[in-house]
Amino acid sequence: MNALIPVYHADGSLYACASEQRFSRLQSAGLVARVVRNRKGQVKRATLFLRPGEPKPVSANSLAGTRYSFAEMLEHGPAWELKHLGGNRDGTTYAPSEARQDFLQVVADCTIP
Image (cartoon, rainbow, N blue to C red; front, side, top):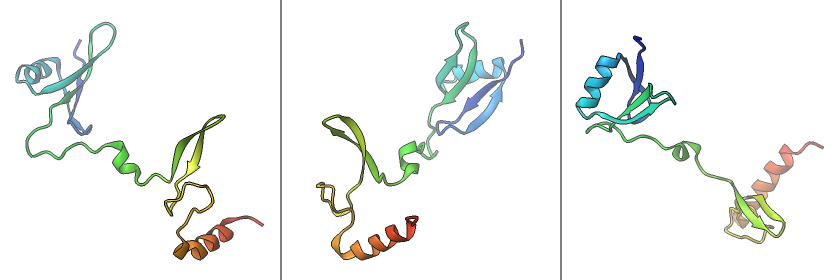
């Protein structure tokens, strides 16, 4: 069967769709870092090694930005808690004192009367 095998760069972008012959040449050259096969052993996709000069792959966490909530363990189990901007963990201050008025104004503007 002449199925094409998708081959990806180390960052996850598509490099090429290779024939079985071309894929075997990539493997023999030592360029393939990871091969995914199905239960029958057929190659479904492959990932190349990171080459010199290529940018490092971007992690999903770096794209997500700052986390403003986190899982906190309570007596009854895990619960989500907001990040305390003032560094206070008592659960009452979510903004530093110098920004508290602005913070409360934004919250008041966002609430539905």
